[in-house]
Length: 100
Image (cartoon, rainbow, N blue to C red; front, side, top):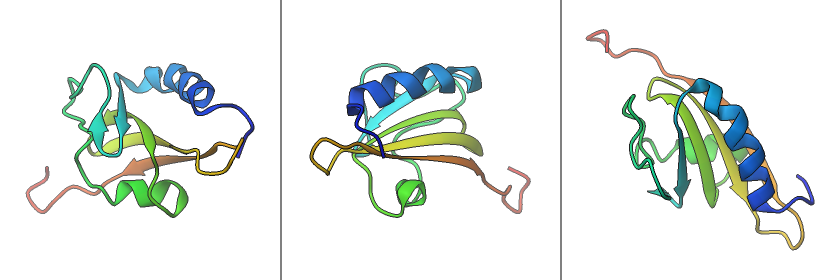
C-alpha cells in the first residue's frame, strides 16, 4: 500500500515491466489504449482468475507483460481513500498435455 496515486504506481511499474516485452494496460479486464494485444499474444481477457492472484481480490487496473505462459502482472486498487493498494505476481503456467 502506498499514498502515491494509482497513476504514479502505474507509471513506475510500466517502465519496469517494459524489460519483459510490451506492456498491456487493462481496466476491469478491458484494454486501455494500445496495444490491445501484445505481439506475443497476451490480452486483457485471458484467465480472469489471475486478477485474484495479485492481491486476493479483484483489482481495478492491471499492467501485464511477458507471454501468456510466463507473465508479470501488477494489480492496482484504489478503494481506500488516499491510499493505493497494489500487488505483484510473476506467473508461470504449465504446458498443456500437447506441449503448448
